[in-house]
Length: 237
Image 1: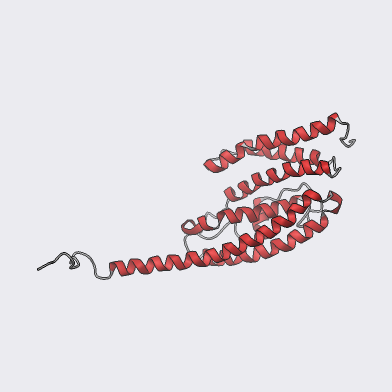
Image 2: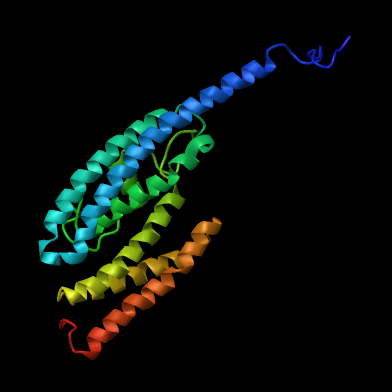
């Protein structure tokens, strides 16, 4: 009699059926999260498209870009709220890989919009704190007391580094628009952020490697300011 295909008595009946149910449940959660994240990604692309107009718009006319960007960010916040509601039902680090990059992107959009004068800052060159970004997103920040969706310090800092990349590009493009004061403003801002990063003892490998590139953004904008100086184009103090 062939006993090879008979289930072992040692195995509990239905153990693999129970495992399959758990797999199906996880798959359903991942699909639901993916739907929200894809919507957020699409909304952020729209926001970034609006913000990119700042590179071809005089600073005196940037208010229209800022207003449009804020309206687009409001749509992102709605998706982030849906994401928080669903994600907070499950352990944070079980599924956070599916949204962390997109939260970084949304954070970058908020930081860029604020730097351009958005969110009632009144003037350009303002840096939102992580708590201010969390308030705009309407989500907790750097949670330690409970396992729920939140904006992490790493996400904020990575978005801040990306902001410096955008500002270095904006410094060059401002010169082509005849705005010679903005590169000076950007240069001082990037130097201040670079000094701030020197204080941090970063443990995250990705964050540490990305932060190493800030010194190149400092030099890049310094070169723009130096060229303006040689040509006598810097505004008088």
